[in-house]
Length: 385
Image 1 (cartoon, rainbow, N blue to C red):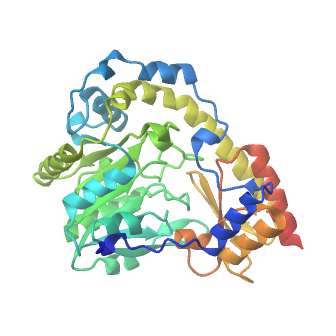
Image 2 (image 1 turned 60 degrees about the vertical axis):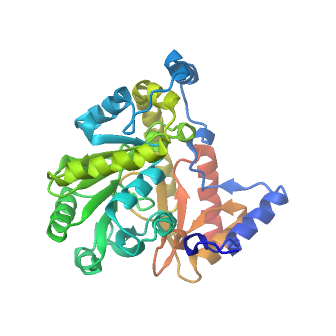
Image 3 (image 1 turned 45 degrees about the vertical axis):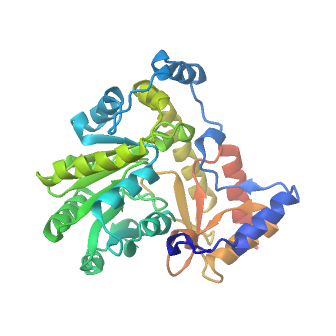
């Protein structure tokens, strides 16, 4: 039976996944520092108000709009200061990428993506038959774009540059200068800029040099992606969106093509669209609780791993993750396996996110605080032996 090459990824578990499966099958208690599901993180949610928002009689009818129902788009556009006509709804941020890749590139074309970053692009691009070209982020106490390397990475078939603002897992926002550089580079080379902004609301401190949403500029064709999953802690409701800016006539053409793709799928359910304005209003309380937890867990990590501890928490400006640099006496995967087997401590090795060089681990700052504190204590103890 012939199958498509685009879906022929290896499916075997890696060594760490196998070890985690064995540990869970043995019912061994684990201290899990990888939790990123907001519905399982013990965060406050206004259950009654959420359920009330979904109990709308309008959900009994079906009146599809390829770009999304107007009231939902209006609520999202108001957050970004855009015309609602520049917003298109999707069932998720992953679907938003798929729609954009269909509109911007043909099979064999290329997309530039940051490294380190979340391990998703290989699959999203591969399913569209696109080639990935990574560009490195550099760390000197803070993370930065390597501008020369990025310029060199733009090949003849490149069609878009993806930026993660803020990046996951480095927690680094684009600066205003970096956003201007990306916009100028895209305008110069005829590329689109795709800015993944699902963690945009989770800054851990103020910074006047930090860039706003990428759609605040219009020098190049630009798309900002976000959704309820991270913004409101509601991944189960499956609502994402694409916001667009840029010069005419490219902007109108892109929106018309996106509408055609969206009309082909009509994947966003009516209930979540009707509820979206109220769900966005309710997001503020959830975000306040998350930011408070992120700051406390970050302070816990810095205290537990202060010198002379041989692990270093890297600088993060926002987001839900914290990278740790460990002694390069073994690989990140070997460290993760050792910590699982000796301490029952579950962390992610840096190679999951395409860290290069030294040994890195990644932990989730969304972890409930008592669990996070216990994990940091176990990590410090294991490194001290």
